[in-house]
Length: 112
Image 1 (cartoon, one colour):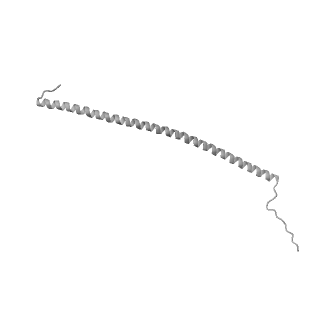
Image 2 (cartoon, helix red, strand yellow):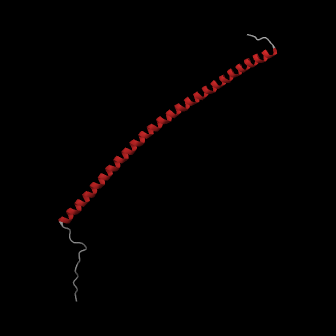
Image 3 (tube, helix red, strand yellow):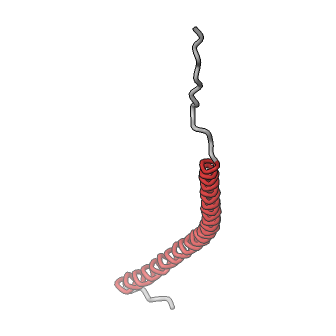
């Protein structure tokens, strides 16, 4: 006995309405991907520009720091020299007044 086989389609036959919907969905997805890629590129450009600007500011700040450190060293040296001079003047005053005071007590005439 011959059996008749029937073929059951896996999916309904594609109609032009279904094809149009698929095409529109595919186009919409591609447009969204292009838009997302554009936004990502713009974000990347902005990040690079910001990084470059910050890098320039950092270099300028490092240069200013070096200038200020040099000035601080110069002022430190100047302060040390001023301290040495103050000590020298103090010793000179101390020696002269103490010597005069001691000589006056001994009755030694002062040199002028």
